Length: 94
Image (cartoon, rainbow, N blue to C red; front, side):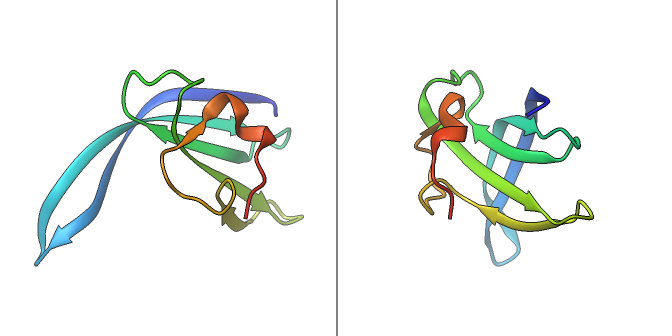
């Protein structure tokens, strides 16, 4: 991994009811990049969450030979906010 960035705010608009926003949340975002500058890990947590806390939702992206994204996977196949950003490389993704 070449580098990572953090503290980008992302809004989650995933919960709607009859076209109206039911819940809006803002997350701190951390991104780790590979040597080709592709984002391979993306993590989300509540603002102020430490990177060592098991309160992160982490995605792992895979890319083909042309650097096109091919898959998004989660630690142990679990998309909950229960992982440590610092431990992202040690998880098994599916």
